[in-house]
Length: 533
Image (cartoon, rainbow, N blue to C red):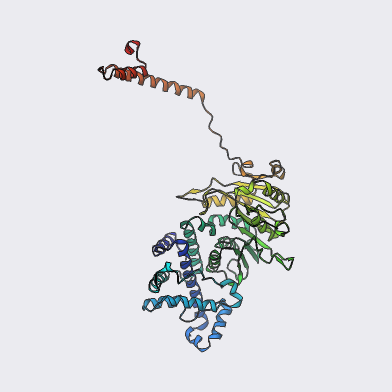
């Protein structure tokens, strides 16, 4: 069962009405935290129903709490004690016995009950829910009331214990919060249409791989990882797809972990870190002076555009063999990091600003190195205003590590979109055209061109799309005879109008007060000499 667009919109409207004075950027932390706890509770209750066969979880816990905890940990990676389920919170609300400490105690118990093998996945995942914040209310009573309203609201959302439905709703709400929380909020969210293009390109011809590894070094909410995994035929098979990601912003890191799990990704198939990708290479990287990079079948990224970074003493970093990106723009640092962690037969896609295609100096040298080593496979120009955090047009660059060809496919998809209120949106037909053109890799008039290495070299390794894809539309030829005839007709009509106005002026009675004005008007419309006198 899938949530309809109308149902999603109603849920968003209802959630937003309960927000009060809390800013969306902070409100989302509570809502997503509560939704995730409901998801974990439902998952635990469903599992317990199969395992206990009518026995009470409270009785089992009372008999041997340690054994019961170990049992649930071994299967789920976490423990939710009796009385701490989301349904227990709602039950307490229904009999007027709920207090904010119900939630605080449950979260404390949860953190204490995470299995050692699942620490990296669950540790600190609810830390953004500050239950003592004055934004929830000025005292315990008002904060309790706020939480009661949100819990009751989320409890009313019919999710049928379906992780796909819950995950889809969660991702929908991420997009809505990004669109309504200002520019910075958009940094954690890649529109699904862009994720879809990248995922289809990355997985093309590889959908049947029995094992598949994905890596996003600037993962945000994890939508790129999820969308790419969804195109694999073994999506949902435990252990078949491994998800790796890194995110520097802690709140966004929590958001991404929650998003993956709410889409049904098991904790032991996730390897997500909270760290600075450029300053602390991961996965693995250099250990005790020895480089041990982990390689992936697919790498994808939508990193912060033209980010300032510390580029000092990077010359010996094995990731940046093509050159060190300038400190004012880390675009090529992210790109090279992604390429470095790509398997020899892997494929990567990265979203970047247009400047990477033509800027000179260090970036120009890096671009030339990448081209001479045949790494750049395609450059896809996207429309402007398709991201919530920037109006600038962007490009998707597709790279491979071990290409035998040296040509580059250029696609100008900048004009294919649906215009909306504040943003533009790629339609299904726009996405299909991009992916099909990438797959066929042939010239398409005014849309795509496969440029040879010699062409690119002649352009001084400048990859600006208009140099290769001519989208200029010729104007209709001008019929000079018709234009001349139209001008003569206009002149005749003007002369007739002037004559009619002059006749009207001649009929006016001349007085000392209007004599000068009438004389000037007659002169303007071609009056006779006698008239002027």
